[in-house]
Length: 314
View 1: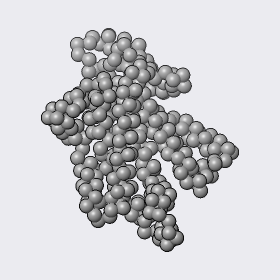
View 2: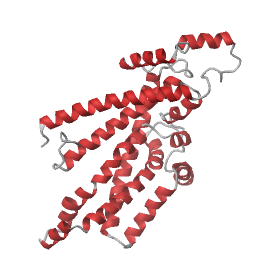
View 3: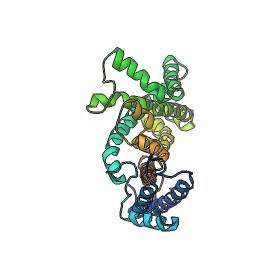
């Protein structure tokens, strides 16, 4: 059981780190964003100079940068991420509210697929070390690591949608529409988890306490489940933080190939469009999810291994 005092200290420390980290990210992003050459309204064609000036005044871009920065922080304190320069009728809050659920569902399914398949392949490969199953699992893992999803996504469409007709080609609607993009998005993560789990399992299986457990007559199932997987899975949990954040907030390539209305395209198009509020809003949102995911990973350490005290340095 986690100590209540240690848990409270852990939560307060993480809340403080969350606020400071987000402030640093907002500040750096704001500075870099305005350091990039270009203007959000100069790309508009055939706009009179007076119209551009009026637009800048409307969005507050006519004020000095320090004033813009302070105003943005003030609105951020009220959870107002501002209007989008390009989506005239929507704010950044609207964009996140409407598009994030799609990316979140896709990301959650991808994580589930990557975890179940990756852990299974890694455990099987380690227990059948240098056997046919080991080589097969590692070939799948190498393919997953080596082939980017920009190739996997069209390949899955060709095989499972066009040739076999098992799933829709593209678009978003029913659960069937989510299967192929989830596999394409999670395949690389699955491969990474499989390779990491296999190497950790092999290392743990060669430890003295495993040999001692075998000498005491414990069954293979008990040794694997209670002593091997529990210790080998810790490095896998470590990478789940950034992995989860990346998958939950969407991937531009997969969402583009399958015509999915997620968050992915906003990470890319907002930069080329100089849509400052969207750049800042999506960066803050992504960072918050990443920090939250890392928090949950650290919390999971304490649950899996009681020797780790959350209130004492982790």
